[in-house]
Amino acid sequence: MPERPTEETSGETVEANGPVPCRVVVCRDCCCGSPKVTGIDHAAQTARLRAEVPVRISDCLDVCDQANVIVVQPSALGRAAGGRPVWLGLVNDTDATEDIIAWVHAGGPGATPLPDILDLYAFTPPRRTVTS
Image (cartoon, rainbow, N blue to C red; front, side):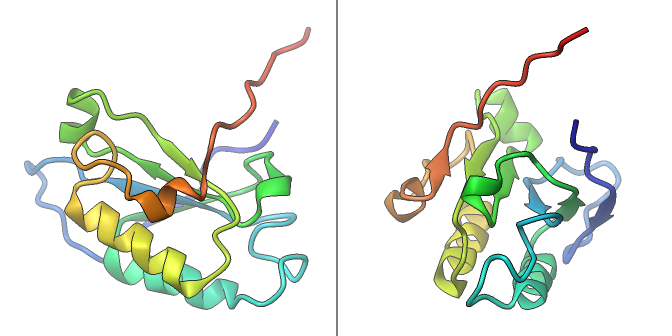
């Protein structure tokens, strides 16, 4: 089973008593963030996201056929409004990265509707079953 996100950084300072912002989980392991996905500067993509939004780096999220995968988690306000994490796959160009940043700045899941352009990247991850 893939590990949980292991690193957390932020391009913004969040007040200790302030609202919890949207967070972006970036898959970086066997396929995502590797030379297997060509034509993208993976380090630059991660750095750009970190400069703008809170980012967590995850080991494999187990949806390699959708590499590069980014999950936008709702803010506290977005979750209170019913927002759920949004999984985005095939995020392999700078325009998509900029669209994600803009959506997170606008409020993200639950607070702001998913922009039509990002709807092209959205997918439902497969359910995991636990076997004994």
